[in-house]
Amino acid sequence: MMHPFFPPAVSLRFVPVWRRNLLVWRKLAIPSILGNLADPMIYVLGLGYGLGSILPQVGGVSYVAFLAAGMVCSSTMNSATFEAMYSAFSRMHVQRTWDAITNAPIELDDVVLAELVWAASKSVLSGLAILVVIWALGLSGSALALWVIPLLPLIGLTFGALGLAMTALARSYDFFMYYFTLVITPMIMVSGVFFPAEQLPAAFQAVAGFLPLIHAVALARPLLFGQVPADILLHIGVMLAYAVAGFYAAAILCRRRLLK
Amino acid sequence: MAVLAAQNLRKSYDGQEVIAGVSFGIAPGECFGLLGPNGAGKTTTLRLCLGLTRPDGGSVELMRRPVPGEARPARARVGVVPQMDNLDPDFTVRENLLVYGRYFGLPDRTTRERIPQLLEFAGLAGRADSRIQTLSGGMKRRLTLARALINDPDLIFMDEPTTGLDPQARHLIWERLKQLLAQGKTIVLTTHFMEEAERLCARLAIMDRGRFIAEGSPRELISRHIEPHVAEVHGDGVMEWAEGEAGALASRVEKSGETVFCYTADPGPLLASLSRRPDLRYLHRPADLEDVFLKLTGRELRD
Image 1 (cartoon, each protein chain N blue to C red):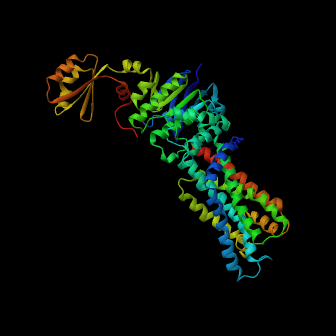
Image 2: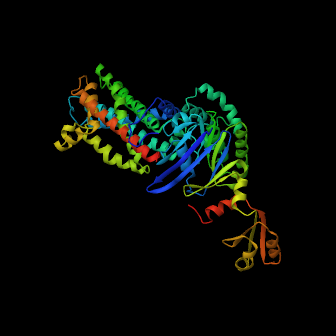
Image 3: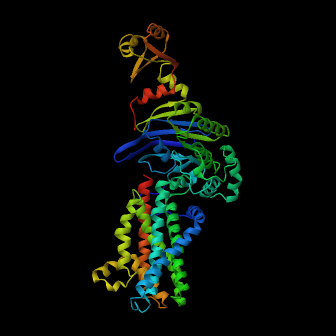
């Protein structure tokens, strides 16, 4: 067992826990994949073509293409956040699955890492689903867009880690509503998913710069439209910093909650 | 050489000491029972032994390894039946065992070979593909026991293994635990069923407010702490009788609600007095572990 504030001592023992989640998911894979596809399709097609018909080009591309590029990031974020909060909370608190696992020779840090990697894995599927939609609709023709694929797990790890820290603090499912309402939804609004962030007052833009989502969008959108993004290392660095800090916080908060 | 040794364990939560200096050693092949009212510190003691929480003072050696420092390799030789069922509800019986084997680093092939005999042992043969929701409480408990045996452990911790089970299910679990002891496994169990402790445990400790307040075999505890005969008396005149005559006839008289418990080494005069009182009904029986338990931990409710 680890000291309360020691950095997470992770090991490859997280793999069987990740595989446990995979086995559960496989039983529900078809509806899950359909959900991954249907939800963003509705947004991209509904908002994209509905709003797009009354909007001129946005940022040099059609509105539907602009929106789809933003939604690759926000869907990946949402998927990782959901999995790390609602699903992980079920396993930690409701089903006591984590207790069963930590009675075996697996440490809590390994379980938290497994949940993080799992949330990221699942979120990659959500992001890929939108990429497929983008390619199927012919919204992106650049080979650079393939670089969005390795960006997806980074987005997943970033928001999975933040979600797990929330899970470690949650007393019930209701707690997660605050996080969505007070953090996730405002962040989507200021991060250039639905419209360019430059449309907002400078103060909002300044705040957005400290949040991780805008950095994901700043990488994904240019890549999809065939440009090499500016400040690549900065964007990756901010997301990595959130991922590492979030995971560290999640590990410590979980220890405080479960190993007391 | 002890498979589990605890030295002067201490643990506080929010300034409240829940484990206040507990020491014990458990020899291979032993069945050790930890008895105590709710909140006595039984589950916390088990968590300390498993390295799931860090003591504020004292030390634990589990399977000859210091815990929590080397809890991971120590737990590889240990099985745990927790108080609350935490089987995986998304999985079948077989999948529960298979996935749990992976947590121990067992190859799937090894686990698959073990599953039929474990299910046989747990009385779940033919239920390998059942979903967890379709199992009764007793079946879930037995599956949890089978799961705890997936790594063929030397030492098994059981936290109230029969709480909430009907007598049939309880007896089946007891039979299985005896089989495990016959195979040479060591068992540490917590319970508040005295009958369970008397049947299974060669040695037990009664725990209260974070301390061991008595330790020994069930028989030793009874002979050391309590008079061998008990008369439970009730009826309209019982309180007046208890205040009067009874005091001289029994070495100890305890009142609990409408019943008076008389403890004595020589029941003759007590029973003679009771036979002259048609208004009083009584039950004369040998003292048991429950009497010891109630004497040492008191009769008031604990929650």
